Image (tube, rainbow, N blue to C red; front, side, top):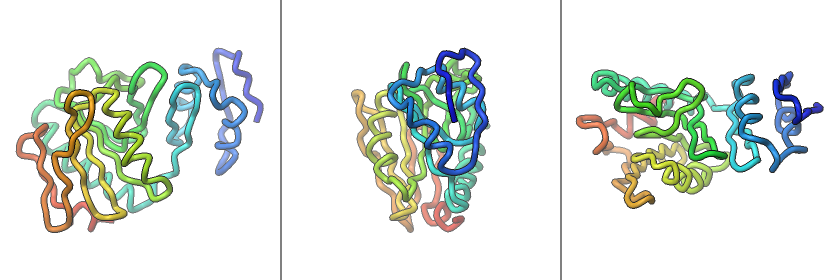
Length: 206
C-alpha cells in the first residue's frame, strides 16, 4: 500500500493481518504525531506511537477481554459513584508530545478533569494493562517507564501468565511497588478508597 506522507487528509484502506504491519514499515521512524492520530482515527487496530515509530499491538484474546470486562465493571461501580469515569481500549493517552499509549483501562476520579479530552486523554489517575503473552516486557517493563514519564499516579499490571496483580504507585517520578497480589488475596488501592478485587475472581473469569 502506498502512503503519501505529504497528504494532510490521510485516508487509508485497512486490510487484514500482516498487511497492516507491512504497510507501516517504509515510514518507521518518520511518522508524525498527526499522521499517527489520523491512522488511529480510521481503524480499530491498537496502535501505539513513540518518536516517529508506530507499533501494531496484537488483537486481544477472549481471555484478555474477559479480564478487562470484569475489571471495567468493578472499577465503574466505585468510580462512577465518586463522580469519576472509566474507559477502555481503544482510547489513546498522551505520555508526552510524540508518545502515545493505548492502556487496557483508564480511570479519572473526576469526570470533569481537563485531562479528559475527546480525541485522546492527557493523562489519567490510574491505568491498567493486562499482560500479553506475545511480549510481556511491554507491560511489565517498557510501560512502567512510560506511565511514570506521563506522571500517572497508579499503574496496575494484571498478569495472566502468573496470576498476579502488581499495584505500582508513583513516587518522585518513578514507580514503587504498593504490592504484588496473588491468588487467595485481594488487591488494595490507595487511590480508590474502599476498592479491592479478588485475584481469584479476576483470573477465573477468563
